[in-house]
Structures are given as C-alpha cells and as structure tokens.
Length: 226
Image 1 (spheres, one colour):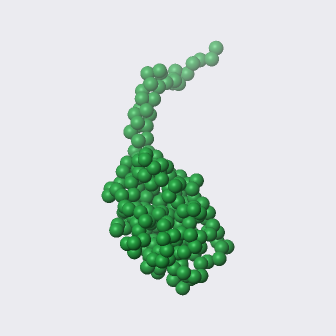
Image 2 (cartoon, helix red, strand yellow):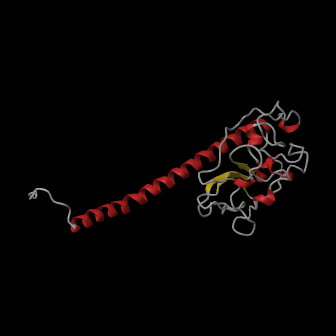
C-alpha cells in the first residue's frame, strides 16, 4: 500500500473562501479605479480633438476673415443669404456624415436638430470639405477640384488646416456651431454660442446652442460668442 505523504495537503474550504474574498475585495477596489481612468482618458482624448478643431478654425479665420459658412454655390457670407451653414460635423472622412451625427432631435433636450438643420447637401456640413480640402460644395474627396473663385479662392485658402480628426471616443461626430460665428451681423442665421462639442458617452447633445454652460455629459467649450 502506498504511504500517504503527510507533508502534502490541499486547501481547505475555509481557506478557499478566504482567498476568494480577498480577490473580490481587491477587484471591488481597483476595478472602479480602472474604469474611472479609462473614462478620464476618453474625455482627455475628446478635449484634445476639440482643441485641434479650435486651432483649425482660428487658422481658417486668419486667412479668409470668416469661419466656414459656405452653402449653395456662393461661399462669401457677406454677399448672399444662401450662406446659412449652421454647423460643421467632424467625423471619419469625406462625404455626408449624417450617419455619425449624435442624437439631437428638436424638442428633446438641446434643440440642435442636426438632420433638419444641415444643408441641402449634407456634405457641406462636413468640416473635411472646408478645412482639409478646399471644396466646400462637393463631396470632399481628395481628387476633387479646389474652389478657385469667390471667398474660398486658392489665393486665400492656405490649408489644409486640420488632419483627419475622426469621430469622438464615443462613436459620434464632433459638432461646431458655426452658424453663430459669422462676422457680419446681418448674416447671422442662428442664435446662440459658438460651441465645439462632443456629445459624450450617451451620444446625445444635451447642451443647447444658446446655453452658457455644458449640460449632462457633453464635452467641449464655447469657442466664439457674438
């Protein structure tokens, strides 16, 4: 008969329960900390992108003497009431970004109503077409012909002013409220503040265009106020 080695023993049930209790306690302490740091890193990433957007808009304004406001075929905000672009969307690339808009239904929170307030050709609301390529009225692909006349003429447009930003860390386009940034008072077509925003973790723009402070989990700041 094989003699049992008295020096070998397994864990008792009490010891296993004790070890599991320690693991659960440590997890309850460090998991929330890890999630908090992860959330903070996303917010920092969104803020960094918003700063880049702000810098690009500043550079654009320095060269063209106005913010991106081009709609229809006229890109000069001082000569035509067609210049009624209300916001820019910063997303994954060229073309229409409507599928990347955050939630913004009129009457339920912020009253941005992005889908209704975009231009007849939503590509014009794509910041890529104004800041990355000089083609505000086309689909913004890199092979498009640049605008050569008017207020976006190649003699004034010195971009690209921004590299591809991409969607925010939560999966939605950044929104810049350029409608209130037009410099000629008679051409301002929307009221409110010049917000640059990420809709935050919930994907809903809770901060109204005329608000003076952020709401809920939105991330951003007022870049321009009239």
